[in-house]
Structure formats: C-alpha cells, structure tokens
Image 1 (cartoon, rainbow, N blue to C red):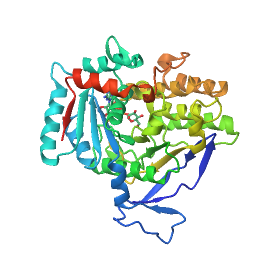
Image 2 (image 1 turned 45 degrees about the horizontal axis):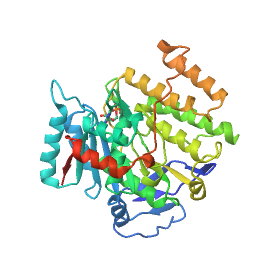
Image 3 (image 1 turned 180 degrees about the vertical axis):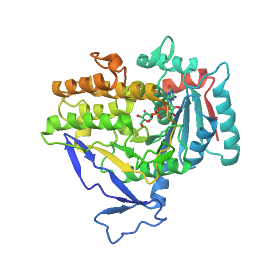
Length: 394
Ligand code: GDD
C-alpha cells in the first residue's frame, strides 16, 4: 500500500491526533521501496501487512443481518487474520444464529480460515463474566444487548488468542473489497505508529445513497458530521485554537493495538466509537492526572485513513440515526473534561435534531471496564466449560 504520511498532527497532552491520510495505491507489491515522493508518502509492502495480519483479530459484530452480507464480509477478511464473529441475532421464532453458524461452516469448508463464533446471549458467557466480577456488562443475568458489549466479548477472545491488534468490521457491509481494504488500512496504521498504543480509524471517501433515483456520493454520514463537530469543540476549548482534526467520531470500522485496547473504558451500545476518543483524551490528554504514566512517555497515536472504496451498508432508518446521535453526543456531554459551553451547545443541537426529547440531557452511557482488569485465564476456563455456542472453526 502507498499512503500519505500524516500532513498535520495536533497534540492533546500525550495524544497525537493525525489528520486524514489518503491512500495512493492499494497494493504496492511485496517489496518496500522509496518512491520519488518519499518525504510525503509511505510505501508499505504486502509482506509487512501480512506480518501484522498474523497478529490481528478481526471482529465482526452481527445482529440479524442478511446472511449474504455476513458471508461477503468474511470473504473480504485476509486469511492470515483470525476472525471473531459475535452474534446477537435472534434465536426464535427463526434461529438466525444457527443459520449463521451453518453458513460459516459451509464457507469455511472451502477456505479453512480461523474463525471463532459465539452468541452474545449465551448464559455461559454471562457466567464467565460473573466469575471474574465483570458485572458492568450484565443485565438480568445475561450480557446486555449492544454492539459495544459484543466488542468486549471479542476483545477478550482476542486476548485469549494472544493477539496484538484488534480490528472491527460491521457485518452489514455490501462490498467485500472494501472490507479487505479496511484490514490493509489497519495494518498500515499500526506499521506507521511510533507507539505501542495506537488506534486506526477509517474515514470513508464516500457513503453512497440513492436520492431521487440517482446514486449520490455524500462525504459525511448524518451522525458523524455532528459528533465530529463536538469532538473538535471539545479539543479547541482546551487548545485555544479552532480545530477540524477529528473526522472519524463514529468510525464503526477501526482497530486498536491490544496494549491500548486493554486500558480503555468502553461505552455501551452505539456510543462506543465516540467514547473511545473521549476516553483517550480523558486518560492521556493531561487534563486529568494520568492513571498510566508509562503511556504518557510513549504517547498515543490516532490515525484516520481514508478509503478508496466507498462505504455501502444497510440504511436502518431515522429512528436508528437519532439513537446513534444522542448516544454519541451523550458520550461527549457526560465526560468530566467536557466544558459547560460545549454541553450547552450539545443540548441545543439535540433539542433541534431530536425534538421529542427537548430539554432532556442525553443519557449517561453505561461504562464498561478496561479489559486489563479481567483475569483472562479464569474467564477463558469458565467460557470453554460453559459457553455452548462457542465454536472454533479451522
Ligand atoms: N454482537 C452484536 N450485538 N452486534 C450488533 C448489535 C448487538 O447488540 N447491534 C448491532 N450489531 C451489529 C450490526 O449487525 C452491524 O454489523 C454492526 O453491529 C453495526 O450496527 P448497525 O445497527 O448496522 O449500525 P449502523 O450501520 O447504523 O452504524 C454503524 O456505523 C456507524 C458509523 O457510521 C455502527 O458501526 C456505529 O457504531 C457507527 O457509529
């Protein structure tokens, strides 16, 4: 891959926020070579990418998506990555989870990937969490619904597999080639990082929509436009300089080095991607005394890399957009580092965009503890004994 080196970086305490980087060539061959523009671009060989892929799990959270989409996503994930599918699909009246399991079995007959599958509502998983006192993820004796909850399960499975990187890809992606590109982008970001604490967020070149019978290629999603603005307001209220650095406030497709993933708190449901950024600023931004001074020395790299492929995914309607918007803004609003001026402005936007809840503060997100706190040996021992849906293919 040949991609632009970050042209601009903003510093927020120990956090290095890199501006969006463009991909010039998706595959630049097996050899690393300097181009004439070597001061502006990085050439990353396919060998280097493969080496990262071998150390990376790709997590696919899925809830009642079409099987063909899920199968397409699996086909785009490079063979060297270990795939973890965490399903929260319905078990009745139609057992969609069983359909997913059957599809993966058939798919894997041809490709022999390493794929781990589990159902989020498996009582055995809840028991494994209870056994280690990780209760924030539980509700009425089971793991709570929510994408972030699925991500936590997968991160722990990734730790069980002793992987160094974890990447996330939604199951409702229409373009397998885009999925493949996301994984290459993750690997490229990790290769460029100067720190073992790094995150790579995908910035979509376009999110195509059908409008008035024509294909239209808007640049920003309806939620990300707003959450990016407030993330930037938060940053500029400390630095004193106007900022547009955050362009990936809601990047469902992103990856984290396990060293960083281990330290972060996660917000339940759809607040998760925005809150990851907020929590990084809280923990390593220097506003609040740091709990992990060692990280302050290495710094945290956040890359935002723009795809070549457009992002084509399921449109789940206006209600869903409003839920995502208020969750994302809630993650910023309730942060201890969010100044009153930004809070007031968030309230104005929510009153305007979600009139039904006028005057009400956004919900306080439920916060899940960092994976580092988990006794992984004990968690895995209970999981292997009790989780009946845990299936390891390949
Ligand atoms: N395991 C699990 N558990 N997966 C879930 C759950 C759950 O409770 N809820 C949703 N998913 C899966 C979906 O099947 C899909 O693969 C992925 O999580 C994202 O959920 P969607 O409902 O499709 O969200 P979206 O496409 O509207 O929003 C996505 O993109 C946003 C940025 O544009 C999400 O990734 C958002 O988190 C992201 O902010």
